[in-house]
Length: 245
Image 1 (cartoon, rainbow, N blue to C red):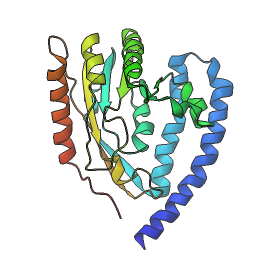
Image 2 (cartoon, rainbow, N blue to C red):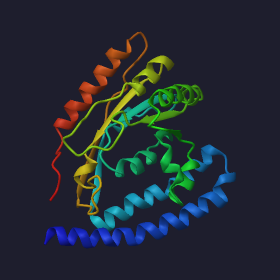
Image 3 (cartoon, helix red, strand yellow):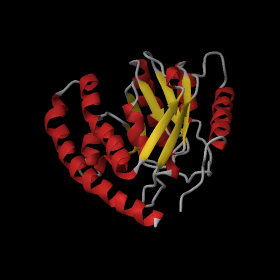
């Protein structure tokens, strides 16, 4: 019965989601493309805020954040996060600091959604060309960091089920160390409410923990990477990581 109710609530969610993403994406590409980036970003991510609100109303998915005080108010940084679902890709763009996201270029070709996503100036890479992708991340990432922006990377590379960690790429760490900017680790358990590749969204409270910035100056890439990954793994183990149903 619980699964049936969750399924019905998910249908209600999508009945509100799809018309809104189509209509708002068209508004973005017609009107906001002319707006300077710093003003455009909060306008585009108004949809993300709607998404979080509507998901709470329709499916009972809430979230709780710990460590928000660690997010820098100014200056460049690299934020790395584990990746479990689509939920965190929406949520992380609503943080008080605008983030440049490293993502797969195929997303920019998704009708409506991808068109609006382009306006956030992501770094879009071809994951099938790993060597070129890393060069692109380093080149474009350094340019964005040099402009004082925050950069978001999912070092696991793909979405993984709760409890499955996979491996953590060093790309974000290399970029932070080579640019001399702080590395911020973040973890969450979004997959417990929005499981990857599953239709039903389950009610509950997603936990997000943002760690203290890791200073990269005078440290090796391996030292910084180990410190970040060890913290992330410890925090994930302390969170509920069970798949519903």
